[in-house]
Image (cartoon, rainbow, N blue to C red; front, side):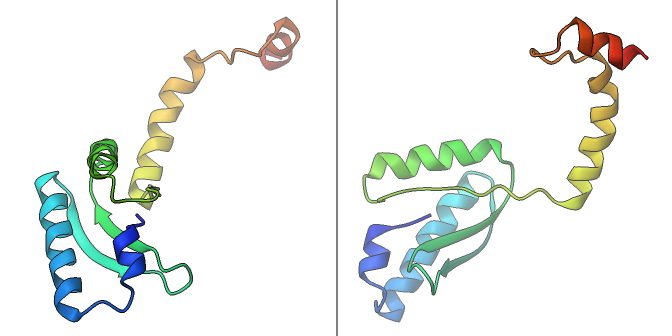
Length: 114
């Protein structure tokens, strides 16, 4: 997540950086995330929050950040652990046979039946 003040203050004091990390950690933990770290991208200067938790809460965190007006932009990258990919593949096997794509026509169905 990119924080305008953080980008402007890339040379900020250690005290300021500690304070920002503490505030970010408390907020994220309150929402149920495990706060891993607050990092600065050397390439872009953006501040990145590394979190572990439910993707469902990301929307709430983004809305909270939007309401402050302090952020130029907020993006989120959801990473799926291998265990989740394996579980999803197992679940997919039970759902896939009942799903009919909206663009499937009769010819497609005949070919799939063969």
